[in-house]
Image 1 (tube, one colour):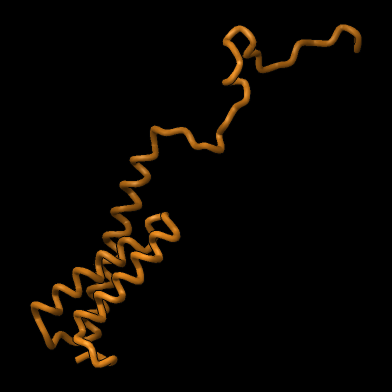
Image 2 (cartoon, helix red, strand yellow; image 1 turned 30 degrees about the vertical axis):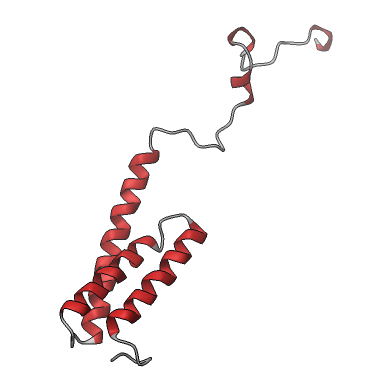
Length: 110
């Protein structure tokens, strides 16, 4: 039994659900890796009851870091070919003939 009177695997399940909710709020793949690791540790504790809490925490931390790094690299590779929405250039909305980067010189200011 865990500290709340619940089995340890259920505590890891609750941790996973809380992290998944946090991931839905942030949407930047920060908590998703650690939530997936918590699910894996919950399954491991269910299969191997009596695993020390320190070992459970170390497995969760290492697995969470590995999954988080993998998701970060996947997300970086996925976004590499896309333009960022903040890289908007108003000249792109003009016809090609009107897309001069330098404004025409004003003959009245010479």
